[in-house]
Image 1 (tube, rainbow, N blue to C red):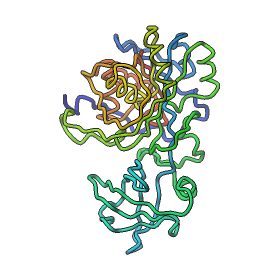
Image 2: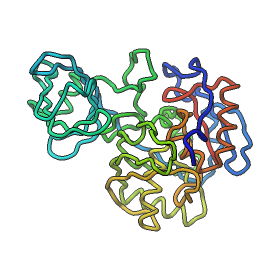
Image 3: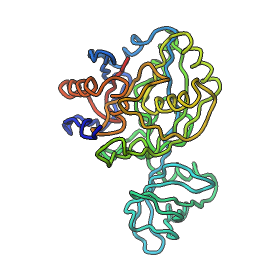
Image 4: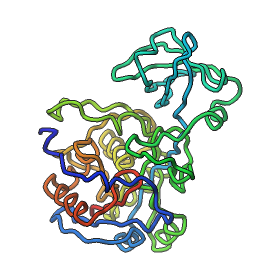
Amino acid sequence: MNIEDFDFDLPESLIAQTPLLDRESSRLLKCNKATGELEDLTFKEVVNQLSPGDCLVLNDTKVMPARLFGIKEETGAKVEMLMLTQQEDNEWEVLIKPAKRIRVGQSVSFGEGKIIATCVKELEQGGRIMKLSYEGILQERLDELGEMPLPPYIKERLDDQDRYQTVYAKAVGSAAAPTAGLHFTEHLLQEIADKGVHIAFITLHVGLGTFRPVSVDNIDDHEMHSEYYQMTAETADLLNRVKASGHKIISVGTTSTRTLETIRSKNDQFVEESGWTDIFIYPGYEFKAIDGLITNFHLPKSTLIMLVSALSTREHILNAYKHAVEEKYRFFSFGDAMILI
């Protein structure tokens, strides 16, 4: 299957630059995953798409203020660093810009030495393994020095940093938000629970695997980057009961989907587990965990639109995206959502 099979025309004007004031006032495009039939809704109507006994699965990861701006110690040259994944001790996988400035053994100073990052390994495409040294607690230093790592297609500054967090964000460790969850409010989640819908939480810390572009023509040749996930025994037990009862499991976002599919593919049931996943879901994949998906509108030729296509068909999803463009839905992280059921 070719990467060009997942391309579509998107006017730049439809890329949402700011979040709506009211999270649940986003639009929601309902797509019947079997027939491709479409219906235009508002996000607060999502409660009507769920039935008592169903389970909504949310990713409770919390975005770190992981973008840092510093200077190369040897020359004073400006360097930008995006922290992605903790490897061991104080070593982190990061993206460096410009990468050519930082080689093994060279260091970058942030906040006049409050954090010193020294390169211990060079990776592909601007990646580095950096060993950090700092006084006190790293999260406090990041809160002091870091910025929220908004995607590069968002050009405007975000005044309220909490708008790039879900209202249920808890487990600190992501380099990007699980954006399908940004539409939920505490009120809407309570309304869903009051209807008799179960709400479960998993964790997947969003790293490079989610947003690295596909650089090969044949998608079979693409390799996903590993991301850390975790499921508790409580969540596993709930999901097993829901599955056995014949009710639907609806994942919120592609990150939740990848976690659920990883665990159930390995174990034939949901289990308490943590680990690293590089699962790549695209058409032809047989889903074992989820019955439906709530997700935002994704970039052309991305692994995310491939995952969504796998749950339905490529033709149905591209038609849905064509409809969304014609109806001027808002796209990407701060944009509108769709539900496939």
